[in-house]
Amino acid sequence: MAAFIPFKLSLLLSLLSNIGFLPGTSKNNVGIFPPTCNRIECPSFDVIQQGNGYEIRRYNSSVWMSTSPIQDISLVEATRTGFLQLFDYIQGKNKYKQHIEMTAPVITEVLPSDGPFCESSFTVSFYVPKVNQANPPPAEGLHLQRWKSTYVAIRQFGGFVSDYNIAEEAAALQASLEGTVWSGAIERSRKDDATSVYTVAQYNSPFEFSGRVNEIWMLFDLEDELLPVQV
Image 1 (spheres, rainbow, N blue to C red):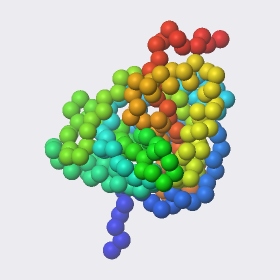
Image 2: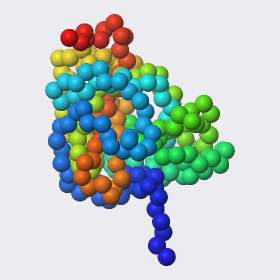
Image 3: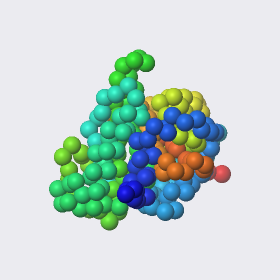
Image 4: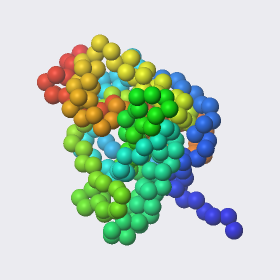
C-alpha cells in the first residue's frame, strides 16, 4: 500500500531529495513574495530597500529550532542530515511529544571551509510557529535560537538548490552590495559573530518544478539612525 506523504513532509523532503542536482533557472530576482508563505506560516518582515540584485529586509523578532553544527563538504548532504532531525522534532520527537505545524523557510547557516575539499560547517534551522514560541518543546541534539529584530540582505534565485550554485549566488549577493552602507554593516557583524558567512533559505516542495523561490541571506545589525533616507 502506497504511503501518503502529507504536504509538510513533502516540503521538508524538497531539501533531502536528489533532485536538488537538477538544473534550474538562476535568474536574479528580488521583490518576489514566496508563494509558500501564502499557505503556511513564515517569519514577518518589512522591506527597507530594493537595490540592483539585492533586497534589504528587517525581520521582526523570531524563534528558530536549530541543529548542532554539521561538518560536511556538501550542503545537500548536511541539510539531509539536519532536516531528518527537524522533521522528527515537529512530528513529536521532543520532550513534550508535541506535534508542530510546518513553516517556511527552512534555513541553513553556512560557514565555508578554507578549501574546496575541506569540510564546511552547516547549521539547519526550523522557524518555530508563533503559537509555540513562548515555550517551544526542547529536544535532544537541538537548541533554540531567539533572534531579536534582524536586518537581512537577500538575493533570490530559482530552480533547485545544489552544491554547485550556492557559492556562486552568495558571491553575486556580496558583489551587488559593494559600495553600499549594507556591505560595511555586514562586515562589522561578521567580526562580532563568526558563526556563519551566509544563510540559504528554501521554501518549496519538491513537486513544484516552476515558480521556485530560494534565497541567500546575509544577516547584520544596523542602528536605525544609519538607515538611508528614502526619497
